Image (cartoon, rainbow, N blue to C red; front, side, top):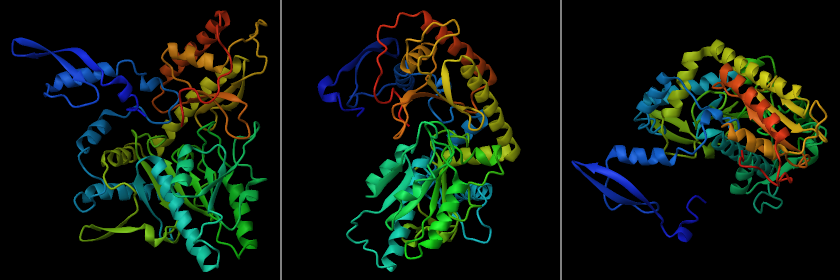
Length: 478
């Protein structure tokens, strides 16, 4: 915990802050873990905080995060102007509610929500809250159906379960803990880092609330085969009419706002009849600052009524299903700005350029001959690779360092590149992953490639004092 050491530190003080008042300067002790006795000038407070943040990494050089780190000045100004608006107060801020409604409809259109249905959706605090809402909807709907079929849902023995590949994002583990659902993970393999369709139904029973398909895993950027999964679920429902309907939720945190523009013909969304809900992160390839997420249900029947609350809106009632009831409207405004500013063509060109830069990095890393590539940036703009066993430089010099050493060396140049083991089923393989975002310009791409190649040469000549295999993740957990 950030504050867990305070008892040990016994409230260390930051000393030596000189604050000018008139012609005099006063030396103040600034406590870290309790309020100052006196106020201080705004510029002094700002300067102190800025100095504390100096040794943090440059967000534009953080290759670990999917989160957007740059927006246009006009967008930043709009977001700053709307920080004070509470997005949940629909009646007090009706135009903000209208912008949210427009965003929901834009996403429903991008994801081919059936026009004859009654789709609905909402903004959330990142896609993690969206996944929580999706999971709750699946659990409540399963429980209602199971109760009608005479399945014991009162004792919850066995508990309801959720099926997902082991390459899941940690928010799904949180959901299952918070809402008492068993997480059933289908192991990936070293050769296939996506949902195993040959075995996924082995994990399904009459207590399964749904299957999650991942449109871009955080580990490697791989897409699950959603069309193939839909066919399996279709056949399962046809032959298991005595069980609650099996449904699919798509975790599109990474690919939800990428695939519609880069692969518009790919069927992964509501064009598949068993996909009942889709979530995404607006602050990833939606190109908006953290933290905004979105979730859409293909029809109201997939969102149980007990999860919907009616709020007053323009003299009428408006449904809401968010967990949080106080959050700024600024991220919604930022998202709508991007939709309005870029349009379909702008998003497409932006994402294709990002793919091009990712492909440049992937090609350069592959050409070194030292790595086995899991993702070379050709589809999702993510580069993922592992060090070859018994890797050698072109002159025959053996590699004596590991990917953790390479992460350290890259960080000396300012680049934050994570190294970590793959999930269950391939956990003995350590990889590095580079996330390329829209704010990674061609100039930065060239700079990264040059620094990466320099790091390889530096490590070749370096005297590695400690290159034992490290366990667990190294600095980054997503």
